[in-house]
Length: 374
Image 1 (cartoon, rainbow, N blue to C red):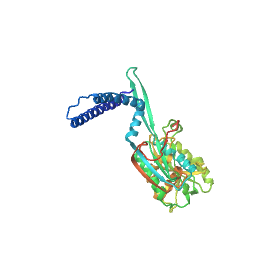
Image 2: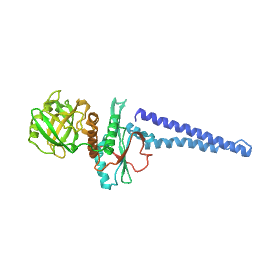
Image 3: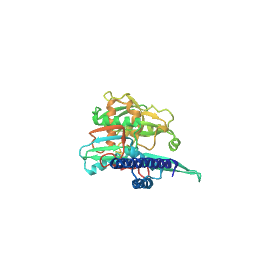
Image 4: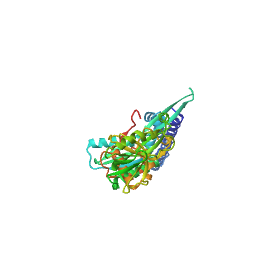
């Protein structure tokens, strides 16, 4: 048992002793006063006092047994228990859906797993043993919780409150994705300038955020490479120009600090972008849909600012969304919502900071623990 745990138990037992003693004296005085008032004589029968004295000894013993039975000896588990008792700080997100079947509800939870997985709180304590001069780590996990109401309202409660930057990003995605209107054209002809010149027709409404490593192969293998946030736009029609880009432009990933602007993509005037021309830093065979994509450079960031591999939209979104026009922000928000949920999200309520305890919250809350390999 740790010193912190011992002090907590000692304080609890001391409180039981004091309260029991006060209760005993109060009961005895009340009984004696009543006896004197009814008989006019001083109380001479001491058996109530004796019974109450025995009870005052038994109660702390029973409390001690209960404390050691209920309260864990693990310090981290003890803290988790106190957080459940008094409540802890969380973020609460309520999502509105059309009526969903149990199978559809399960798919929504599976898709939102990345959001829940990023909210677990792990409590860690390093406990020292003064006798053996050794130490060990005690830990416990505060899970996320979710609850379905009426088959169309999902309430998510995190294990800990989201950081401010992530909370702002999530609110922006939900606001733009559920209320914004699509204003971009479905496709556009983009003029490629540089050594590889020509025109490519791109599917603008299929664009998405992505990230790629920059730097030498050694830097990428050792985790020292910087990262670029890119706008990945699929091709509407294949062109011989694309193969030349794939062969030449992809080498930009091995460049040094500066991103090459020898190859640029210029958009027509009806495509609302902050800049009319963007460096082309890659051309690949496509993501999950296996459609060839043109990768346009948006911003560069140091390796320490990124977790790799991780959710690319979550990391690049807060850094690049302010660089884009509202029409592109709506598009990317809708793409992010489509990745978050296979069903349409019709509305939301987001509380960045709230107090929660599964012991007192109404409804059937289901915990979501991290996976064993997390």
